Image 1: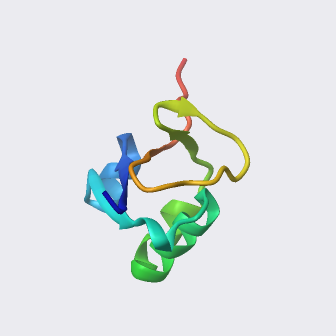
Image 2 (image 1 turned 30 degrees about the horizontal axis):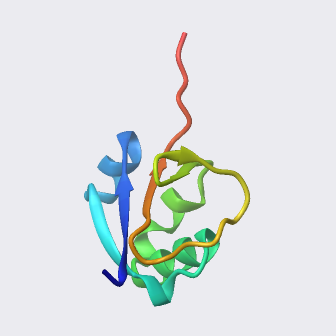
Length: 83
């Protein structure tokens, strides 16, 4: 498996009109590179991807810019708010 599975949730899924995407692992050595690749491939997604987002790798919340490898699952979703 030479891809990273990317999943979008909530409002982000609706804005991008996609729920999942497989990204070549060579294009995403770390989380920031993954987002950069997405913006390059889909320039119209830039506003949604530059908004504050929560990020998880292999179902664990992450901060910073962790390294990624083939077979990883990355989830991006907007912060949860409520009242």
